[in-house]
Length: 420
Image (cartoon, rainbow, N blue to C red; front, side, top):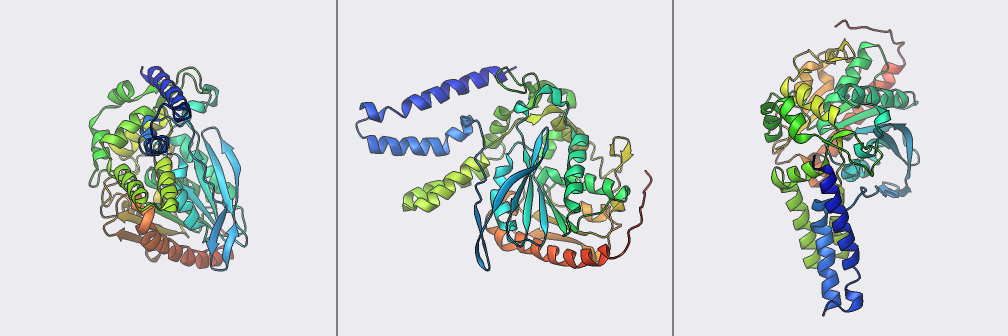
């Protein structure tokens, strides 16, 4: 396997980088200021592709702008699972809670920093903050799609106990396990959140498959196991754990979906050319957040290829989690919003909206689909389209769901079971 060799090369590059920082001090450069500027640009734009930074950048959201002015934000971990922390961002007088289910697709949760910052205007925000699988000891066991569902179930259960409405927002690949967890909760008669929003996710990956979907469907699980799975080497807490490693994910970023990275690098270059230090800092942070990657547990990666992309078992009504058939039609008393971008190259058109038909138990007036014109995948949760189109739609859904939640909570609930 290549993991140990790749990590050794990273260590050499880190050592070279540390040594080169002192070169201007010793007169190795004829123009130290120019050399430092060039070195800074290299570090900001190219080093992230080499994986030289070992940890993702912090969220560092200390205040948020509200109608009444700036408000302090309290960030802390409120729950822990072996592969994921539940991180809370709280501010004063929040009347609702929003759970952001981030995708376990390689990127660190901090990639959705802008999403969290915007949603703080609506209430306290909780986010699934994934732990790098290389840092999870083998003793923690496996983490596949079933374990993912169970983890979300536990997080949701802890949050619905609060005396305020909870809104679940799932993005990209997290939409699949999030819908599964909510369906299973409904089948057990558990209290639902006020709303669920599914954004750009492969609920039915058979519809208009993307390049990613076609690649996943065209290779056998045995091929994926042999070519895409590596083992964490010594030097990490997860030594011996099989993973889909970051060095392969970086190749995917550079070769398969280069558009986002090129756009962020261009934003950085334009800020440099304008001499706008504030814009440079923001562009530098966006590059660092996007390129912060995590090893994915092999079990989850292979489950996703098999259950989500190859057999579309949720859409086929054949997905069982620990023996129980997942039935989205069991969902009741909840607002459902699905959001797609018309230029999304990661999730095909119609894949997310497929949830609207699957969740037929929800009143038709409470099921809504939204298409964002000229919006790519990342624009669904960052940038202008997120700010101007997606977030306002979520706010409207939250408001509708809050009113329904207040009505439903005053009516005693009867436990309902849906047979498989």
